[in-house]
Image (cartoon, rainbow, N blue to C red; front, top):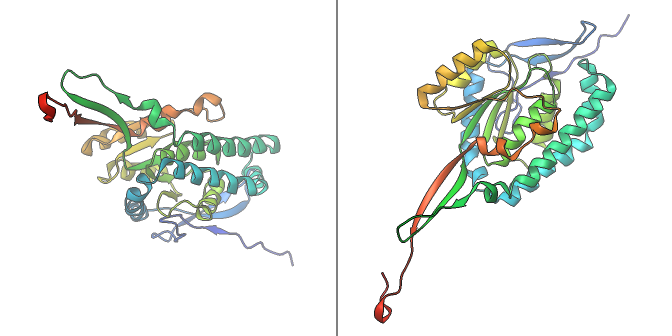
Length: 293
């Protein structure tokens, strides 16, 4: 009798843990030969809400970390991904990517993490300013992270698009909840295992799998989400996201990019998800007789 393989059922990644979907639903992941290669969770609204709670809980500690420490952690993620590169290449091939293209995608994903690790402690110098004012004050403008960012990741790539979005978000001190590609989710859920075994605190990155048609409205209407990044081509979903985001003045970004191009990595993607805070500080003056005013 021919042996039947035991297929892995991939779980969600929420708060540094791997829970099963609250809905109990799954869908089979098919390869190019129409063979089932894994079972993938079909996330629900409740799963998303749990992920937002985890992301909000992690935000304070992550945003307050020293930028050089965030840089160390992002670089550590790159190291962990490098150590498992052969596994990711095999998973990309399993999902239909040509072997040479799969190797290039993994290499670019590792390099992209290293790129943003280098920017963690530098973007503030680039985007900060000392402003000229006509009163006896110092006036500083500095970027600060927005908070919780909801992401509907690129549908056409399994790993590179996901990494290219997560890296600038967490490099800037934000936390995120990411909906992975529905048709190519395998590397996303495996990348969650990389995150779980790195130094990244639980809740900073949360990865869900499932259907965008079911979840995008929840991503854009949740009142404790500060920004949403949408990376797919559906004009209908973009329109609804823009409308829902106005309910709590949520920042909305549509990043429709070719993530394999060098111009798709930029410190300006970090800046997109920052708020500029301006501080006024009085200048102490010394008057006649040493009096301070």
